[in-house]
Image (cartoon, rainbow, N blue to C red; front, side, top):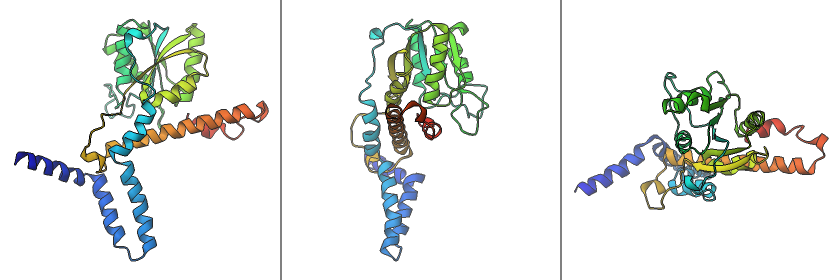
Length: 278
């Protein structure tokens, strides 16, 4: 009886969440529309959103980005000049800014401390200001410094780059920082789904990059309710993978333009809009 109640509560609860409940209502009212074309205009985007919000679809999307970057054993990781952490793990819009609040990518931060404690590099370099278009006042790097110091990393071993807003600017500004200090190698820490794009962008800087992927979102393939019922978590993973694919596409388009056009014709129209995705 308990097992039956457990199953029923899980199934009923899943359909009562805002996302699946809203999609079911759209299907219900869409089917009640009088004209076939009206039904199609409602049901097709609803079905697409339903599919994107299932675990099976989101896992297919996210795992294709992570599969080429399996976890690295710290013992096999060469020592480097710095541990380079990409922003995105600190919530700089947190209501209570007197304490550090991390995002779902928190492993970027904890892995950096772990590698520092294992003496893989004498310093941690955090790169990231604010990626919010309308809020540039509070920087991620400020909270990152507080977090690292709270876990015992000395202040002289923390280097901050606080102006970059995306991966492209991360690469450009940290490369300049490395050149000024004579550093040549870095252990690059970012989420596994973001590593492919990061390697492409940082590969242009001339730095010797050793990838340390973390924050894995791929899961064991087992049948769950979320394979059929939409969830906000699955939709988040799909959205993340979608953004990464767009970023990779834009990067490759931009590189093709750079390769085939004469220097004086490069980026006159594409530089601003493409940089937002790289």
